[in-house]
Amino acid sequence: MVRKSASGMAAIMIVALLLTPDAATPEGALAIGSTGNVTKDGIAYGGAYNHPNRQSAIDAALSTCRKWKAPKAAARCELVATFTRECYAVANDPKAGTPGTGWATGGDKETAGQRALAACRATAGRNRRDFCVVDQSNCDVND
Image 1 (cartoon, one colour):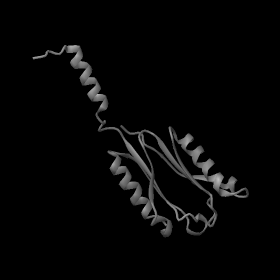
Image 2 (tube, helix red, strand yellow):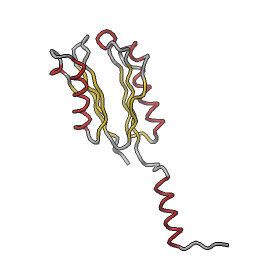
Image 3 (cartoon, helix red, strand yellow):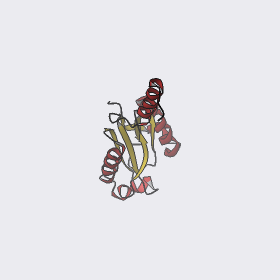
Image 4 (cartoon, one colour):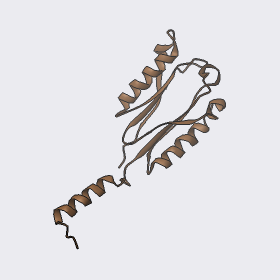
């Protein structure tokens, strides 16, 4: 019989704890729906944050996206991001029939918002890029 030292057993237990998923870790997800023609069909999105597990966050984000007020886009909702202890933001040009839209994740709301705005401005066109605004942002932070 092989005896293990107390320090060796402690090291094994620490590694096992580090590899075990933390049940209290919040989970988030972002789903986006688009036909590829934002001008005509709009865009749908759903964000979820502070969920008890990843699948719960994914299910909530997809469910919200699929109920969005742009039915053709909502029918095409897909998961675009999952995250833990991060933020997400969605930005768009609020004028109906304009193509500007963008989304992103980041370590905080400001970073996620800046990234989403940059993506919106890239798709909005030269005459509309300054109209992009963050429409939704939330952070997954509860423990």
